[in-house]
Length: 174
Image (cartoon, rainbow, N blue to C red; front, side, top):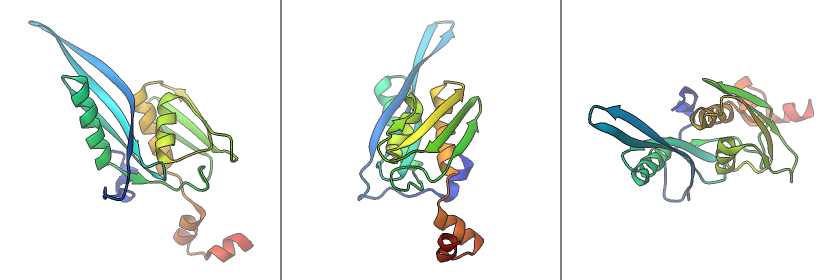
């Protein structure tokens, strides 16, 4: 998983109800002397739609097994994100390999304005209102990882105040 996620990881407990979303299934063909060997790779996003999300990749000889492996991998890589009133706290840009994502907070009622792979991650994370744009590569693997990287870089006001050693009253009073 991404290096930033190491300190934000959480453990799966029984009280967390996770929902999984299949982002993409790809057929991979290996041509050998004996013919073609087909395998499948699946990328899945799991989340509780309340600020917890994880992504996973599964590979196998059949589709169902690859999806199941991806779900298990995603449950091992759960992270908690700062979602405030259904949106992200500030503008964020991130790049992962060829995929570049841009996200901006939106007012209540806007909805998730994002494309396929980004939409799956944002909705699983519990983001209700956001404006998002993907640039560069449309590869779902890279888009999902770029989106998660952008979400992991988000910081809310309380976290920033704690890191700077400032009291929240001083932040709001100016």
